[in-house]
Each structure stands twice: as C-alpha cells, then as structure tokens.
Image 1 (cartoon, rainbow, N blue to C red):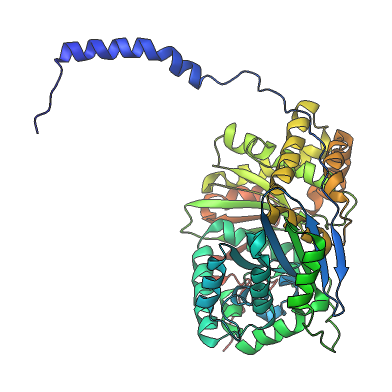
Image 2 (image 1 turned 90 degrees about the vertical axis):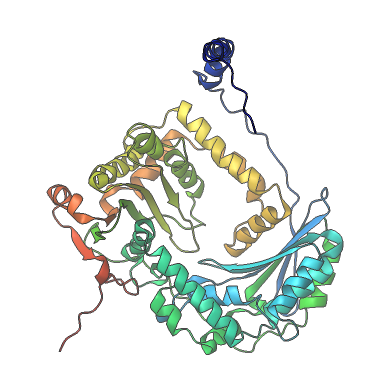
Length: 495
C-alpha cells in the first residue's frame, strides 16, 4: 500500500501551528490547582437498626432490611479463625474455609459452582484471624435457594482427599512465591517479633512445613469443633423482610444440631516478652530492594480509643498521608509507604512500612520512626486533620453502599460484641477526634520505646550503617529463617 507523505517543510509548519493551538490546553491540563478544595462537611446517615433472633440450636440470626436494589447478601460467620489453629498446624482454619465450598454429601465442587451460577449469584468463603465466613450474594427472589446451598456447604462438607491435596499444593506454591518477596518476609517476621509463639504470631496462611503436616483428620476435627450453630452468626441484609429471613434461617439451619461438647476455650493472644525493642535484619543477598517495617502492639477492636487510633493511622497512611509524603513524594525513596492498625479480638499489631533501595534502608527506617514519633511530639494541624478524617469517613461510607458491605460491617460488630448503634454514630465519633486526642494516643500507644525494626534485603548494603545507629542488631541469613517459631532460626543439626 502506498503511503502519502506531506512535504517536510509543510509538515513542520502544520506541527508548529498545532503546537501553538493546543499548548495552552495542555498546560492548563497539567497545571495542578494551587489550593485543592476542602472536603465537604460529612452528612449524617441513618441506617435501619438490625433485628435479631436466636434459634433453639444457638444460631444467632441478624437481619438488616434495606430496600432499593433487589439484592440480598448473606454471611454465615464462625466465631473462630486463625487464632484457633494449633501451634504446629498454622493455616488450618484457612484450609478449612477454602475447602468448605469444594464438595458436600450431595454436590461436587463443580455442582456447587453451577448451582450458584444458575441463581445469578456468588458464593465465597474465607478465614481471618478471629472469624471464618461463608457468604452469598443473589437477587432477593433467589435468597431461599442460595441459603440452602450455603447451609449445605457449611454443614455437610466432605473434604475429599483430592481437593485437599490440590489445595495443599496450591497453598505451598503460593507461599513459596510469596516468601521470595522481602515485604512478605518482613510481615511474617514482624508478627513473630510482636506476638512470639502466641496465636497471632503464626502466619495466617501457614508455612510450607505446617501445610504439609495438616491431614484430612485435622481438617475434619477443626470443622466439627468450631463449625456449630452455637458458635455461628447468620447475617442477612438488603431487600428482605425480617420475618422472611427468620423463616428461611429456621428452614435451612434450624435442624443444625448443636454438639453436646462445650466450645473449646481460646488462649489469649499474648504479646512477645522482650527486654526492649528489637532490630532484626533478614539477609537476602538476591533482594533487589529492601523491605523496611517498624512494628509494635496496637489496640483491640473494643478499645475505647479505637476511633482515635484509626484517625491517627489515617494521618500516617494513604497516598497523601505523612509516610508517603515524606518517603515517596519528597524524597523519592520508595514507590509507596503506609501503615496499618489492625484491631482484632485481642490486641493486634501496628506497623509502618516501605520498600526502598538496599542502600536507603536505614534512612527509610529512621523516617518511618520519625513520622510515627511526630504524632506525639506536635499537634496535627486542622488543614491536615480535616482531609484525613474525610478519608476515614469516605471509606466507611463506601463500604456500606452495597448489601454485602453492610452485612460485613454488621457481622464484624456482632463478632466483636459491639453495639449496632455504632454504625450510625461512626461519622460523629470520627469528627469529634481532636489533635490533642491524637497526641495522647500516639504517646501512649505508638511510642518508639516499644517499636521494633525489621529489614529484609541485601544486608551488605545497609548493615554497617545500621550497626552504627543501633547497638544490637540481630542478623538472620534468609536460608536460616524459620517462621514456625518465635526464635526465627532453624535449629542447628548436631552430630
């Protein structure tokens, strides 16, 4: 095909004219607004109060009706998760939750998937630290058949050997890939540093060693021990009347038999005992970047300072949070930095982290510590506090837009024994937080004296400088790292 070309001089002239015509628009598009508009005042919102009933077998049923979209979400929550895993079987609750939808006494995994698809819905299951969940989402006219499937997978899973072995290999493959990443290693090490051999110290997904040890008998026993009506909560939300929801719950779960044995008591999620904060380096010579993480204990979900905590974390985290501003935007030391405050049934962890060049690891660690410390040393100005509160409120509101989000929020409150009124008080609770509140919280709960440093990377690039800054640095070659124990080191074989 012949290509038509303009004469060079004419083409250049046209290009110059186009540049002159469109340059102002390009400049205007690329020039940021000098002063971003302030967030609008948050609007109060009123959600209907959930209605609940406890069945004769002990199953707690909670219904929150919200008309509008003809959708219903259901979630059956088991009030135990990773914290119930035996010490040598980390990842057991996670495997049980994954396998729960992979076959029952009357349906294969394929038949379950096809039945849910025929309803135009979805079915999912997962385990977290304090609870395991199985959820369905369907149009309101299909909630009955969907709830029948949910009840079937929760009550009558078969845990077939081929499904167990398939999941075992997938999990080990995923862990092998994950543990090639410095950031994943740092997170696992941090949990052991904060919680030691207590329940929260174990990896939620397990380790290659613990997943290899888990047998079908372990899976069946865990299911029988914790998946029982008097340890479960059914939450239904969306376009459904409470009377209908209770009737369906009775129909499909009312004959779920409560075992005669008592529920096992759970060990407390204790904190690791150490003489002081630790500085741990995992030497991974092939690491192209270093993962830097500072960590310590935080709060539990019922803590009176919960709302102060989440606002404090918002000041630090997010794209426009202090950590990202200082480490990425001002200094270009990382693609992103942030923090998390995990409020669980027992005290969870606080951590702040970033990935950076190996040679910048010490600088980033000091910046993380400095920014966390600055929360207690100086008040957060209103010009910063207002948008960070808006982020907290916005995330909360966005999570409640869907029936599944609303059900998840109500379910979480139920698991932690918190009043449902908190949903309607949430925005007000956030707005009342002051700079003085944040300073007090940071001083008492985020102090550097109890904060540990974990760095995973090519140690030769940062270890000499780190040792000048910190008197005691623990160095663990990655080949000797053992995440199955709080000691973090593999036992040396003796002759």
